[in-house]
Amino acid sequence: MSKVRVVFFASLKENLGQGECLVELALPLSIAELKRQLADGLDKGEVLLEKGIQSSIDFEFARDSDLIPEQVNEVAFFPPVTGG
Amino acid sequence: MILVQEEDFQVDALYKSLLKSNQTGAVAMFVGLVRQFSDLPKEVCSFELEHYPGMTEKNLQTIVDEANTRWSLLDVCIVHRVGRLSVDDQIVFVGVSASHRAEAFQACDFIMDYLKSRAAFWKKESQGSQSHWVEAKTNDEKSLERWSKLRNS
Image (cartoon, rainbow over all chains, first blue to last red; front, side, top):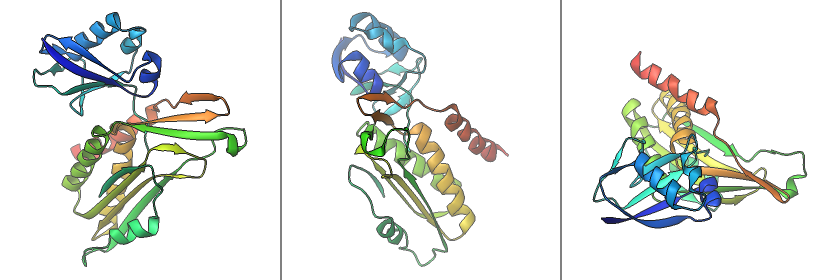
């Protein structure tokens, strides 16, 4: 098992009431599987399953099917970006 | 140069920073501003920009790298503000210098299109005690399609 830092941004951070958490995971694990684990484990975690929620693994945009590697530093979840 | 900062920026200084090469024949620049987004007086409207430190800068560098593979550019400058802003404030600067105007115009347009959909920033608008997160526009995502069509043509 590995301890992984998971961070949240913008409306997701507000809805979850926290900006980050530390989770113990059996890696490798897909983004979709992590989403489901967090949705079950976090208070109001179901917001992670909403359509359009994006993710990244160590600052690289990730898809639901992407695997989180054993050497991971940080996974992030966030709503679609709106810069510029 | 890529900067993500709370401070305002001076367009004149950024323009001058793009003039390092004596091969510069064109500079294209874009400045994004906070426009009035409510019927309420602008004094009670505010705007907040959140980013993902580390990832945002990496996203912007990836976009600049891609622009450099597509066009022959001399220099690129991106400054994006974060934190609390007001109506009329500057949000973003994109400047591109090249030997010819076509490259400069196209690269500036390309960078802005990708910045809107592929860089980790989120906007929140507040009017008095009400606030909401700005939703991504489908048009922004569609704007990217023309660049893949251009590349494939």
